[in-house]
Amino acid sequence: MHLSKLPLQFIHKSLLPLGGVCANRNQCQTRKISTGNVNLAKVAQYQKPDWNRAVTEAEKIVGYPTSFLSLRWLLSDEIANVALHLRKLVGSNHPLLKTGKSLLYNGKNNMQAWGLIVLLVSKAAGHAPDLPDLEQDKAAGVLHSQRALAEVTEMIRTSHLAHKGLVNLQGDETKEDTSDMMFGNKIALLMGDYLLGNCCAELGVLRNQELVSLMSSAVRDLAEAEFVGPRDKQNNPLPARPLPYIEYKPLNDVGLEPLLVSEALGNAQAEWTLRHVLSAGSLLGKSCQGTLKLAGHSYEVQEQGYLFGKHLALAWQACLDREPFAPGSTEPFSLVCAPVMFHLQHDPSFYEEIEKGEIDVHDVDYDKIRKEVLNGPGLDLTQKLQREHSQAALDVLNQLPPSDARTALGNIIAAIRDI
View 1: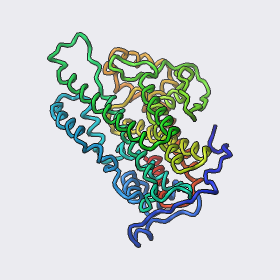
View 2 (view 1 turned 180 degrees about the horizontal axis):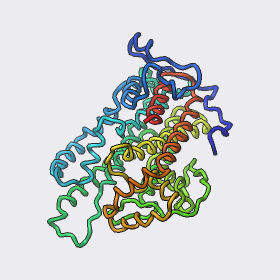
View 3 (view 1 turned 30 degrees about the vertical axis):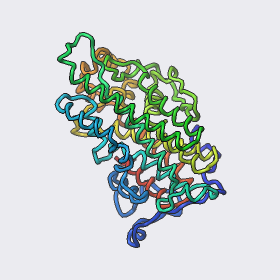
View 4 (view 1 turned 90 degrees about the vertical axis):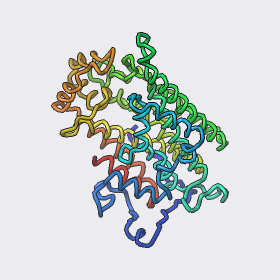
């Protein structure tokens, strides 16, 4: 269902909208609060939308840098011991090292922005007036439980990325060849399990059974994402063989039920959407839904929160999928990225090139695929997809009352849309 057809009103009359907190007078004068809808073209008239600037401004609104959101867990004794062991992996090219680097990278790929988005949604939507004062962090404009949920979101995502770093070792490899990789696998497994275990404990402290069920279904979706469609022996994903053109049917993904996989495979947009709702959209969407549940909003409002997080995650992914195909870029790309899948739908005979990766995706001629994609409709269709999801997220955002937090979320959407 398209968002414009939803008769739901995001602002409940019993809720108290919260404005932003300015650190000083000059800052208050610079950051204009809109009185109407957020306009992507003029979100911040004094600057061109920029990811790093948008995140920095958003961090000021929630009160601290996102990179420190999970510091108390990442600096625990257990993770400190893991960090010591990670030094042994330097030079081994184990995927866990790449994951660690991505977590520390200060750029638009910074995965630590997810907790920030959850807090911004919390602050922009406000909370019910009858919540006890002890539950409220009045300086930040959010609830203590909402801050804990933002940390849980970051830790679930980090644990999933650590587990994705496991390498499938083949039986014909010698013990000497696999010793470093085996050690890296043990560290990745233990690190991911430790973080995921802390998430479960933190959710239990919140004492909200519905929230536990909601976030558990998001973890289930992350796991299921690793079993969608064909894979090579290293578990790298391959697109399904394209089917004759079928009209895209939006996924019925609101709720706790598992998504139906079989109907989406072979249809470029449906398969891409399914893969990334499971691997990203479900977690961010259900985190936004959960934070509104903690604030005492109605189910209709919570559902809109889910749609906002899902569409923002999909717009983000479409943006990342386009980057390796920028002029002059030689970055590696996934075979299930949107430009490749759209090109396969356009030219199904090109799937013969994809089939070369059934044993190992490195057997695929990536330069040939890049050239074909650049000359086909895949990039334009991906940009269209990116703008559609950005606009869908904006449609939900515009139902919130004007505030600094809403403006910050609009800036983030604008930065994603315009990249």
